[in-house]
Image (spheres, rainbow, N blue to C red):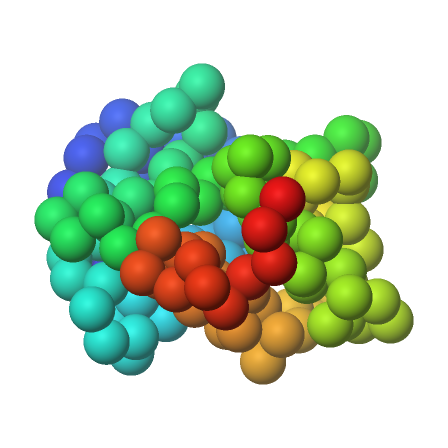
Length: 139
């Protein structure tokens, strides 16, 4: 597991109850793992934005921030900037495998196994969004 550099973020994760904590920690680890595997992302910065764990490519500015948190009563979500076309693209690519909330988030059931391959693709796309805008349709 990737160590926490900020004790406030670690405390936030510890305050989530299971199964949300387990699912969000798995998503967090997948974000860091994906960032390490994608060329040009650089060091990922973990911070709190709007009280939510946020992952940014401040070093390289290659991507758009990714936030994670509980969602509604029984879900967790991976949030993306609504000014991007990421969710629109993900919805086209994975209509049967992923659930979405408007143009903001991928919604996941914490009691189900994570769709790792699909999430790795989505996270990669967000982490290099600014470097690969030509790949995405214009809004």
